[in-house]
Amino acid sequence: MPHNSIELFSGAGGLALGMSKAGFHHALLVESNLDAINTLRHNHDIGQTQIREWNIIYSDIRDIAFKKYKKKITMVAGGPPCQPFSVAGKHQGKNDDRDMFPEAVRVVREIQPNSFVFENVKGLLTKSFSTYFEYILLQLKYPEITRQPKQKWVEHLSHLKKINTQALYSGLKYNVVFKLLNAADYGVPQKRERVFIVGFRSDIDMTWDFPKPTHSKDSLLWQQWVTGEYWQKFDAHTLIKPSVPNGIQAKLIKKYGLFPPVEKPWMTLRESIFDLQNSEKSSVSNHEFRDGAKAYPGHTGSPIDEPSKTLKAGDHGVPGGENMIRYNDGKVRYLTVREAARVQTFPDDYHFTGSWTECMRQIGNAVPVKLAEVVASSVAQFLS
Image (cartoon, rainbow, N blue to C red; front, side):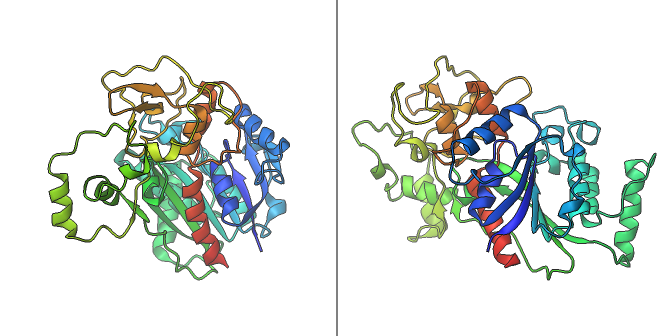
């Protein structure tokens, strides 16, 4: 029996797809970006397997009342716009009008779901945002203790801390945990660190914890430089290996002896895209090649035999360095939209609409589908 959920700030649908795979049924998806909505609606209209029954709303969540869903929804999820906390952004945090955490708290307050999952950038954990991050967590813990008109956020924080210390509050309350997860540690071909905030209503026995990593860098290095089995997956006649890292084999054997690491190996960029056709006339959706990639200091691309660097999206276009492949002979080229989608573990039958730059922005803003599925599956199993 699927759990009913509501998805906020849906973007191109990465988190929603992962949660759908985990068994959540989306009663509502809300997104305010027209390009992302066009992608969602296009996949809905062509009957993409997962999205064809979703109720997709093009709206600012500030314009929607969610009280009609009160206690009818198991899960509220979403990725509040991350630019206010991004390392690559302007670091405005609470002063940025794109900070949607207050709205996420309002939705939790109005719906009172069994659980929630919110995802955001690593920058949220930096020292400069530590006090505001504490404020976010306490608002989610006590969503009914609202900020009063003209009350400064630091005053509201002080009030929340006092209530939390006294431990006498008997109203709506959530047990909240957070953790920085690296997508590569869960089988995503990308080194992407993101903060996940998960909460369960306090009337639910809280014994849940984040899933343990299933993949590791050491396991990849072991298969590359101890057993060599990694290279056996590819055509030996066209394969160009990178230089062997100094002393890597001795270091790994000293650390693990004759037995390999227990985790699966990190998945590399080469593994994730090697079966795609290398033709401009490819029949694969969104797989059109783009010329003009150049490498220079600070703009070197992702080594093909490692997980990709974090795909990014920016206000003024997409940084090309993170969206390039670097081959072992020094050559570089841009990822196609389909290859970038593979890096974010979107299914191949999921189509992105818009220009290359806009598609890459949508993909760069997304939660990796597989990482979302791992976290959501753990939550769903616990709720069941």
